[in-house]
Amino acid sequence: MFGMEILLALGIGIGLSSVAGVRAFLPLALAALFAALGLFELPSPYVDVGGDGWWWSVFGVLAALSVLEIVLDKVRAVERALNIAVVPVRAVSGALLFNAALGLDLGTGSAPWLIAGATIAGAVAVAKVLLRPPAKSASAGVSVAFLSFFEDVVGLVGGAVGFFVPYLPLLLVAFLLFFYYRVRRRRGRKYGGLRILGD
Image (tube, rainbow, N blue to C red):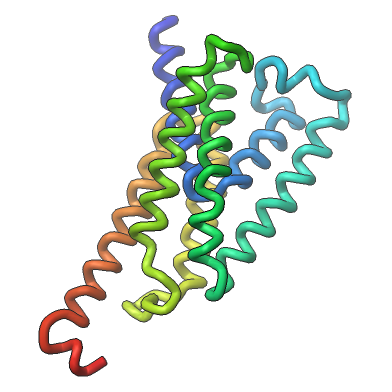
């Protein structure tokens, strides 16, 4: 039973950290919301920093940051720079979520799990920067707003179910990245060879 619990916790940590690579603040906001509602128990020192209303305040701040990230991601002039700039933030988010999913305190013993979460989230964030079609070339059948909205859905759904269903968010993130790969490949074929003369 203990081994099964570890696998489930690892699955939750992997799923949440992968979602953090797509949206930095949304899964953290959901963690604060679920903690405030008593649906998800966070380890020390997460739970030892405030009173009853603490998690609602944290949720409010993280929700505002989530909205800001979501809105800026839809602005063609800044979306690429934003996604590059927040790679470290997404890595930190993934580290915290992975560690919290395992129920570990933030101590020296948690360093390997923090690194694991940061690595997963950072890898997803970098892959997203590399694979997501830039604004100027998003004419391959999809718009920048649609791509960003797709990420919002993955962040919201993956972040919500990730606390209760192991590994499923990882599949959503993998599908998102595969979709970006297909869009870029499709555009490459569309404008490749002699057809580039028609551009």
